[in-house]
Length: 284
Length: 284
View (cartoon, chains in turn green, yellow):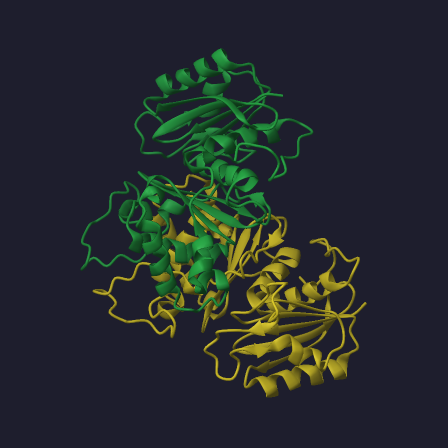
């Protein structure tokens, strides 16, 4: 078996072919430009490095991944020029004729971290990426979370003190939602973490994206989160500093979480496969 | 089989015994006063109406329901006088010697609505109660959500325009968290709904509690929710008014959701039972 994976992110795409154990053999990364150019670079990669038995795609969104939807596989309301209402799956399928599984880029990253990284052994956790945009993926009760559509952490609403910070926010839909305000500020990120904890009760939160690489931001966000929770949720993960360090973490797989997860989506798309056991030899 | 159920809420307790189909045979409701008096009224009810084969308890929290915790069954940081750090399960067990299952009152209500009410057939939804306090329960991917502990919707953080509303909030832990601000205002409730949708992607949201009985509040909250989402999440449930009315709903079981769910917790606590199929004859 050989699997193909694409992390089809809003900033960059990462393509990979992997062996049957999920270990990437060849990868290629290129910036996300217009859809035609970007997709043709991907199909060219798989033509050169194929064939594969199944493809997994983790794509930026919002994405129609409702299995019964007539527009399944379409990127919907993105403000990204050229990409709104694009039928991504059909575009990819025209070059790649194998079973194709699709999820959000952040659900794919969550899956990668679950099988091979910082979330091994958990059944309920969140993956949030904080960079140019903010996205979120989730495993809840042992399955990737789709529910109505898929999580959209970036568009939650958080307190915004307009006296201290009069910035109106840049989200074209919502102004000062989390994504409109935040990218990289510990205060707003901490409020988002409070809401994720109060709503989803995750066993761990993994923070990826460019922001996770700033060495001061995570410690500041942890401290501010602890202040905001004010001891109300009395579990060691939230009240003891050393446990909190293991609760709010960066991805073990770093920037590879998304493409590793896309490969796992491909693995799961092959009939009879039931997902690899975490901890076996693999891409970690 | 006979099952016992207690909705052990912060305002009132509802006790019930039910037949093997989950249909309540006897119920009794009394206000939540001090723990000694309240618990003795419950044990007296079950002595008079017993015996039962299993008990289910849906209790106000925060509640230690971590299965491996040495303080499992304890109400923890509640500001309610007399109830903080109370070992509820041991207190109840001293009078009732049968298998006992414990969850939050709102998870119990979610379970009741799932088996017999407004959430039948879904696998991912939220139940929020808005009254004196605000609580939330959830089914995610076909199971009640516990995760790290349990959801605590009331303590999420939402935008608060202190120019328009200088109220500092009344939560003793967090000041102007949702519960500190809201109880019954459509603007704050709508922001909470946005966050619940962005984080948990529920297929439906059930709103119970006293607020759900105000005939103007839900339509206002739906409208404001729709304004806040601004068409970003393009699914009919969120963009079409008639679908939105079926998406944000009141509990089919009304005030009985909690105790019906507590009975279902009892049913599930009996080895060999796997939960009743929704739609059969039952308490609906």
